Structures are given as C-alpha cells and as structure tokens.
Image (cartoon, rainbow, N blue to C red; front, side):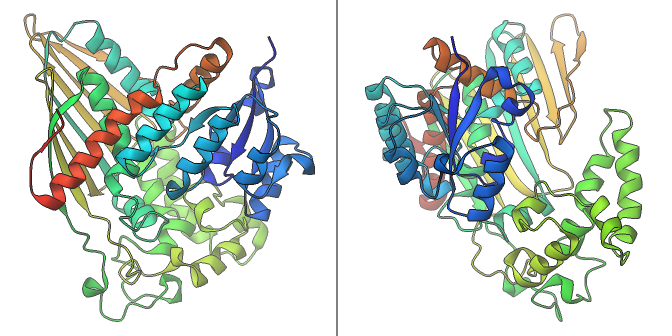
Length: 453
C-alpha cells in the first residue's frame, strides 16, 4: 500500500513546523503534496521545504478544495476562528482530516464536525497531543492497569509562564476572548481529565480572574514600545526585548531542566552571554546566536536580527504589555467537574508561573499518582496505599513543546487513514473537552453550576 499523502491548509507556526515534518525525516511514511496559505512569503517558504510545484500551491482553502482531490488527508491548521468551514469542505471533498484544536468555538459547530465526518465516512481527529505525550500516556496506562484502584479525585493545573501569557494572550493573536483562553489553551487539559476519569461530565462550575495587564496598571513613563528604552526594563518581567531578542525567560526556564544533564547548565550560560552577543554590531555574530522558532517565529518572518528589531519597533509584539488595550483574556480560571461515574476533578489555569509546567494528581482507593511536565523534562511518582511503596517511573525528555506527543499523534492518525480504523482520539472523543469548556465559560459568566446530564 502506498504511503499516505497530505495537503496542509494554513502554513503558519503549526502548519509549517509540526506533524508533517515527520515526512522530512522519514519520507517512506508519507509526503505533503499541496498547501493553501494566504501569506505569499509563508506559502513560498512551505513550498521550498516540501518541494511543491506552483500548481500545488494555493492562496485559499477554497481554491485547494475546489481542485479534484489529490491527497489522502488534510491538516487544517488555520487560525482558531477559521476551523469549521475548511474542515467541513475537506470532509465533503473526501479527505481525512487532522484538525488543530480547538475544533470549534461553540457547541453546535463541534457537533456539525462530528456528524459531517460520520456522514462522509472519513477520519476526523483533533490535535490533542498530550494524550500521546511521554508523561500522560504513561499515567493513563497506570490508571487503566487498576493499580490505583477506583479513581476518586483528579487535580490538574496548567501553569502558564508569565512571559508565555504575555506573548500569546496579551500581545498575541488570541488576546481576545472571542477565542476563550480556557478553550484555546486548556481543551488539552480538559481532554486529559476526561480521559483519565473514563467518563462524561455531569456538572461543571468555574470562576475567573480578569487580567491585570491593562492601561490602568501601566508603569509611569513606560513607552509604547519596549525597545524605545523603557525606564522599567530592568524590573519588568514582560519586557519584549528580553523575551524575544535576549530570550531571557525561555532560557531561565530551560536552565531549571534536570534532564538531559547538559541542558540546564548550557541554558544558564547562554542566558548570561546572549544579551551581550545580541548587541554586537556584527550581523553574522548576532545571526549565529539567533532563535527563529516559536515564540520568535510568531513575531516576524524576517529571520535576521534587523528584521526582529524592526518588528519590535513597529508591531504589537513589541508593545508595552500594559498598552495593548484590546486584550481581555482572564489571568486565571478554575474549573470543577463532577463526572457521571463519581470522579471529582479540579483544574486550574493560571498565567503567573515562573516556568511553563503542568501538574497532575490522580488519587484512587488503592494508590496515588503525581506527575509534573515541564518544557523538556517530566516526572511521575506512583504510590501504593497498602505497601507504602513509591515508584519513580522514568519519563523521557521531549523537545517538541508538547511532551513528546506530536509525532505519536500524527503516526496514529496516519495509521487510522491507512487502515480505516479509529484513531486513539477521535473528534467525538475531543468533543467532551469542548463541552466541559463551554459549560465552564457559562458558569463563570452566569455564576451557576451547569448541569450537563
């Protein structure tokens, strides 16, 4: 059987850098044969990477899907506001679809997607990569083995680093609550909680805290753009120059990594010397130590030091974080879920962590499991109530930004396409996390407990 072929709709960060890069390293597993991307620079960059001819490069998803089907699957990686229409069209055109999360922004649209895939007889999977991550796949295996007994409670938190929050949810594309923070960021976590609970949600409640990053809290004398020389640069954790040019917060996070052994000390050393190197007036030196993947890749497509400086002087990415003014995402949100099988779950999403990390705890009648997932490394402890024994389960480091889950998810999707069997996480499975998120948002606004039964 021939290896599967795919088209990519949306060649931004996710469409360009995730999933289909598998084919660059393992071409026998499949190939990309077309792209739709409105930005000409990104379209050309994608075409060059995958060796696409001009007749297989399209400006819009409407154009590529109006062409007779010429691949097995479509990766839909458009902006969060634009997932539904291209997915429905791709399914109708006969493509299997791998869809970036969130699948849709309302309950009715989610169900339309699930039903459309069923009518078309095509696989529709959502990129809930953390089910495949090194930590959570191992934790789920522990739960499924019965080692913890009957599950009583789940505690989980997504602790978003302060600079990541400023990047994505204040300066970034998802700074507006039209795409709710809980849904966009943490449908991953709600999916994991439902997966670990092994049940559907019965009742949901939620509370939010508004953001403090507004004009009312702007420091006196702060300029519109950080690069102009802010008098608070030495004390402000949201300084755009430190985040994007010096990479100080990201390197500080990596400096805390315990594995691989050399990563922490190496990141700590680079954190000290990079600000000096960035100010060397020799372009070749500055370029050598540049970082052009996320989050910098979101700031500019001009991957030169001069291009980055221009973006920091002229775009919203360089603006004082207190002066963006059209951002209204909350800074924290709690979600409590009672599942139909009696499992109680508590989830916290918050924006003031010193580093990006997830925490999970599952307690059962026979044992407990506690895990931490950081940017690269992770750990998992499993305790037995009767014997008192505590096992430290080794978790491999991962460098894909999603705990090692991206390629296993993509391979599982390709297997489903090739064999006609269901993927591990189908769109119908993913709908449960969205259903909980919609209920949580209703609860937070209305001040009620939402009954989903």
